[in-house]
Image 1 (cartoon, rainbow, N blue to C red):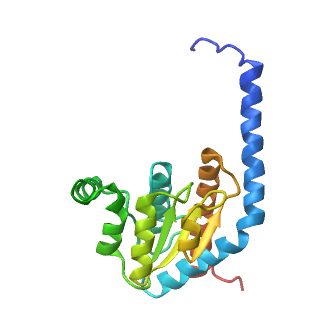
Image 2 (cartoon, rainbow, N blue to C red):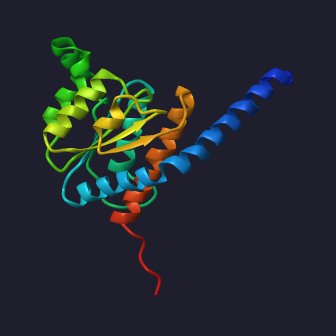
Amino acid sequence: MGDVLDEPSAELLARVRAVFGEHARVLAATHDATAAPIAAAASLMIESLRGGGKVLAFGNGGSAADAQHLAAELAGRFDRERPALPALALTANSSDLTAIGNDYGFAFVFARLIEAHGRPGDVVIAISTSGNSENVLRAVDVARARGLRSIGLIGKGGGKLAARVDVAISVPSDVTARVQEAHATITHLLCELVELALFPPPRRT
C-alpha cells in the first residue's frame, strides 16, 4: 500500500465545489439557450448524411480535440451498433496541417482542407470558443462559397463566427474551460440525435 494521502485543504475542496457548481450552472443555462439551435444543427447533419454527404469538423487546441472526438463517434459509433457515418476531423493529419501552414500560412490550414474534401451537401462544424479564430473563419467562408452548410460551436457572444454560419450554438459563458465542457456535451448530443434519426431502435410489437 502507498502512503496515505494527507487530507485535502479546505481551500482545495472549496475550489472543487465551486468549479462543479459553475459547470452545472453553465450547462443549465446552455440547455435553456441552445436547445433549438442544437436541434437545428442535428437536422442539418441528418439531412446531409441521408443525402450522401459528410461531416467536416475543425477547431484549434481543445476545439481540435472536440472535432476529432465528434468525428470518431460518427465514423465509429456513439451508442449503438450501426453502419459507419462519413466524418472527418480536419485537425487530425499533421502532414496536412504542417504542409499547408508552411506553404500558405496557418490562417489557411482549414480553408485549404475544405477545398480538398468539401462538396456541396456536406456540413462543416466549426468549433471556436471565441468565434474569432482566423483559420476557422476563413474555412467557413470557403465552405459557404462552395455550397456547404455550416454549424458553429462558440462561446458567449459568438464573435465573428456567429454571423457566418447557418446555425450558431453559443454557450452562455466567457470562461474557456466551461465553454469547452459544454461543447463536449453538445457534440455528444448531436451524435445521439443523428443516430436516433438515421438508425432508430426497432419498434416493439
